[in-house]
Length: 148
Image (cartoon, rainbow, N blue to C red; front, side, top):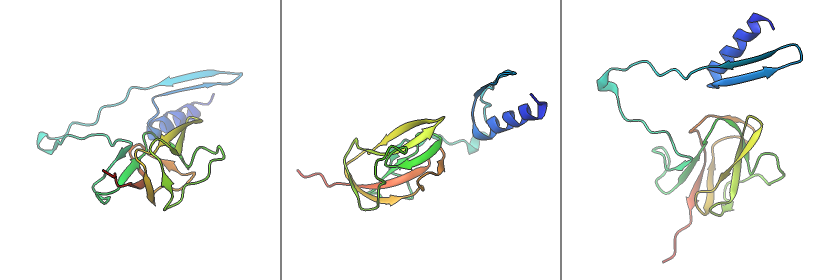
């Protein structure tokens, strides 16, 4: 294997955040592992507690009455499911809590995203088939009013 190809794999790993990669071909086998590098120290005054976004939460830029469904991982986003024949979701469509509303394919494995609440799809923020990042807002649901 060409040294430049190995350097390109390492650069790709750093760019994508992948920590481990294994390639096996008839002529060679290579395994690359890297430790995650801690961020550079920041002045104490600038430190603020940061929390990772949860897959379903309200965000500051969203109206308070909407639930934002965020990506729980990096991958390719699919509305309705990962190419398994489920119909695509549309704005205004009713969904039930626990219903599969989308999927993110990561490393060729589809991971279902379930509706955190019953309600109506108000906004679709990521395009079907597009790459998404961890914590990226995917869609917003207006929860149903709970009847007493």
